[in-house]
Image 1 (spheres, rainbow, N blue to C red):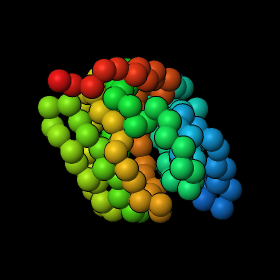
Image 2: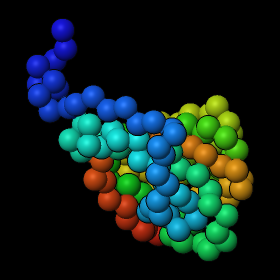
Image 3: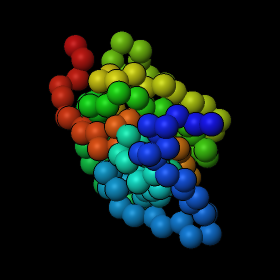
Image 4: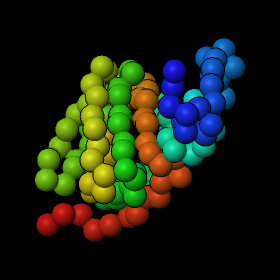
Length: 136
């Protein structure tokens, strides 16, 4: 038996790869595939696959920023991405790597492979991103 509160709020979602829809998301250089978790959890979580789309434009992902959220996990499915985190330094995430990106940590993407695909799970689903000055 499950949690009665969760059973009332959340519903089962089956998001099929064969019917995947890729859209322009938060970042110009990436495409996003919403996995249905946002609607399935009534905005408690969002899960999406993010992939490089080949665009060369440098949008705000390359600027220092943070996300107002309670949880953020990134898992690299394919390729690699290099990020810089305040207090942690530069980290290159490769296929099979996973990070728990602590809430409110300042970070920026430095570069990524052209074949990058990553799974990101964030709570709450409707988090906001703030551009900030980089660490000293």
